[in-house]
Image (spheres, rainbow, N blue to C red):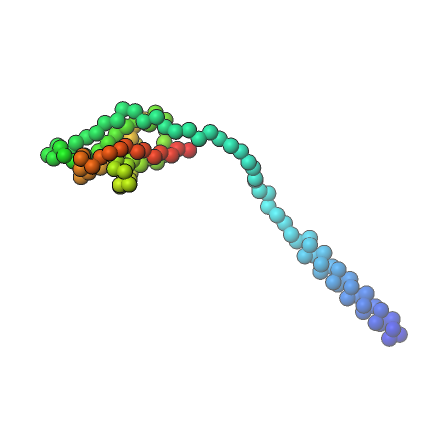
Length: 119
């Protein structure tokens, strides 16, 4: 009788462990997700219609520079002095952007570098 009890207890423990393992395995769920791979063209902008606005009371300083990118952009910055300050630009209309450069000495300007991004 004691032997039957040991066998019955052993079977009960094995069944309990098996049920617990099944419960843990059955409870795993993974939500739907997306993954993909693709490519797209990265092309530059064509900067045209560049216009410099001198300060009215001190024409040796520049108040702003504006230009047309020819395509939509979401963020634009310009640099007029190599290794100098980057100026944030604001959209005027369409694809024309203006950068406030108030106080920049005209004599230091040695480039117009425009960096733009769009979606």
